[in-house]
Amino acid sequence: MEFYGVAAHGATPCLIPSGPYAGYFVSSTSLVADETKDYCDQERYLNSLEIPFSIYPGAEAFTTKGVGKGDIVVYYNPANDVIEYGIVGDRVHAGA
Image (cartoon, rainbow, N blue to C red; front, side, top):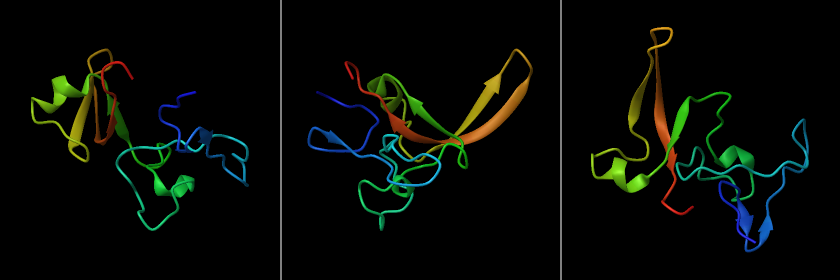
């Protein structure tokens, strides 16, 4: 079994042990928020409730244009003319 975006030790996914999200999988990002935290600790990874970040698809297409993990990005929604800012927190490779 394969997991994407979930911290795992081998084939065993990491679970949040306590608190309001107890029992949920640990959602990982390749951009680490706190390297001092254990691999299975949710606080090791970016928290989308606190930090606006993107996970961009087709990593090769973006990487060849100079976009990389940790870069600042601007999001524009033409439907309501809203501009927001964030960072690149991860990328998805083709076939993943």
